[in-house]
Length: 97
Image 1 (cartoon, rainbow, N blue to C red):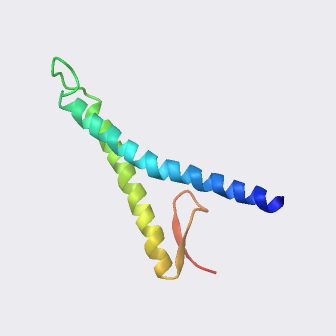
Image 2: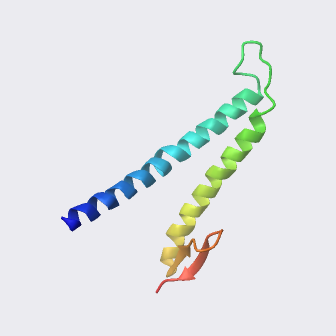
Image 3: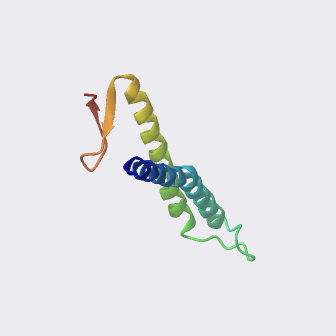
């Protein structure tokens, strides 16, 4: 019974990460595109640009690029015999044990 509980617990974690990375990152990118459309005035009937569009888009695109860079770092570091540690505020590379 404990094995089944552990399997469901692990499946829940995989599902949560899949939803965040599989749907969250593209949704963040789409929100950035929406911010760019708002800043050019394409979202309103009177074509009035919105001041919040470009800063929101910039933050969204920076977060998406950071997620991509972190993912690539995790993949490449394993090839060099290292791993990414999240013990500090920012991720660091450490030797695998």
